[in-house]
Image (cartoon, rainbow, N blue to C red; front, top):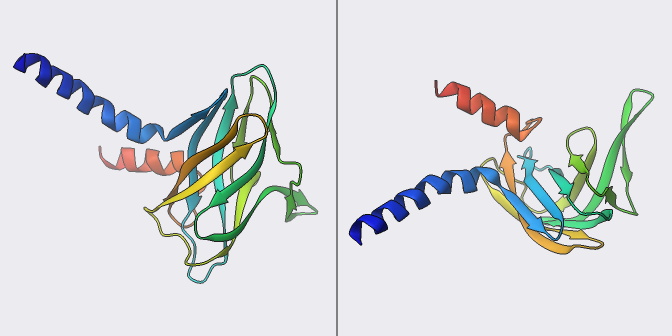
Length: 165
């Protein structure tokens, strides 16, 4: 019996790092992958939230709203370049997640705009929030706060990984 318990504990311990790194959430036919945001500069009043959503269902869904703790107000935005100038457009009808497709919220594209920040975000923090979908409903998520100026969480994770060799 003692041997079985130790093997079970060993298997559980080897799975923990994978669960921590995955940072995925599931609701209905949707999988939300790695919500993240950047650390904010001192006195910054806004931040953007990023993630990807994969819809394995046969029906489109729509991200209709999102929240991020510490923000007085959040909106769904899309950055578009017009005449060399980046403009943020409020997406009043949300962001469609097509059946069988993946939509990425990333710098320079779709994002969650967190405004009226009370204290800003610091690298290493986790910011609680929610995502609300037209069909799937609302799911609580946690946004990992990456370094100020980060372009993607993967680039930083790869840099950290290569730094350990």
